Length: 453
Image (cartoon, rainbow, N blue to C red; front, side, top):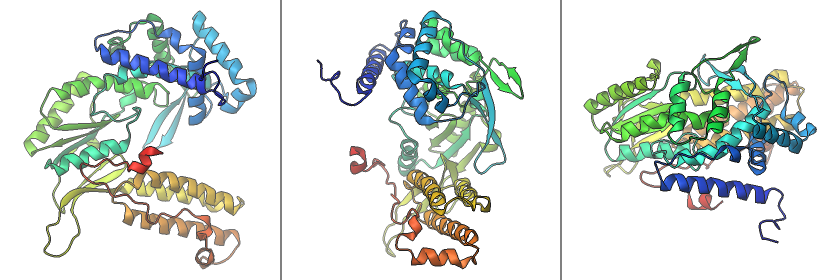
């Protein structure tokens, strides 16, 4: 009996086999940039791939699609039974994707609402299986300027590039994002981009079927010739595949350093003239893809000490002079802290959790929910010059929880603050003190200890 098959941990051999498949595909694509893969469809309905796909879908959670089948109902029905049925349907060519359910979610710090397409659970599993198979092939081609929705790359890697480039002297920034990117990508051009690497007819047919499944809104199914539905599991990979053409074109030109996180773009330039050329060229390249920059979020910013800044990936970035002794040389660097929209989103969320309509909810449960949100929020924004912002949020959190407790037990507003000060554990609230990690130019943002975890 092999060491893998003897593993006492359930599912380990399947996960290892899936990872081995992904490594094989990645290495094959990396070794031959011109290779087109013709035998991928049979990997999609491999039982271990479908099992891994289910685990990804289950971990991400999410609501039911138009069939109203939830993740819990799938577990009651039997995960193995559903996966066997999907494998049979895919093998026989009987699989049909259902239209996605259209929902709208608010954009943090804005009155706009983002359209979200929610596929059925079974369709999410199939999309996750496709993603497992095709992502390594295209990941071998993606360039270092792309950071969004890629394995082993994070938003803070993109933020580190901004810090490094400005430290080298680049002080002109073009900031923009692509208007309705996920909704505007033409299907025909997207499939052409996919076919540069994939020639498996069955996989291409399955991918087209998922794109053309459409969305159901107000009882009517709408099918368009554009868009990779935002909310679909495979959509982020497809968006990166399509925008990879932009990355390649930019690599051959000298218009500044491009940093792209999905549809959010920043270009760091040496001069105003270069920034203006970069914006013109960026607009031309997007037009060639059938896309355009969002006018309201497109501008050129000159970074100077005491001047204006710009927002990117939830942070506000601004050039500042480091504090130091009087008369000593103080370094100018790009500082970042949570943007105004990010702070407002945090305040709104805390207000929602501690709303008076939830007074019947046990106090411990409310505090657990507050801690879960604040821990996740702080985990992202701690890598920045965020101490002041964290102090403000900490005071707001204590104020909201204290006010909630006072209302719950019908006492005055100061009652909650009194309990907080008297409690050795701060009522169990998450402590934001001392967790900020200030970024440094030309240094990895991940600490060595964190890298080993």
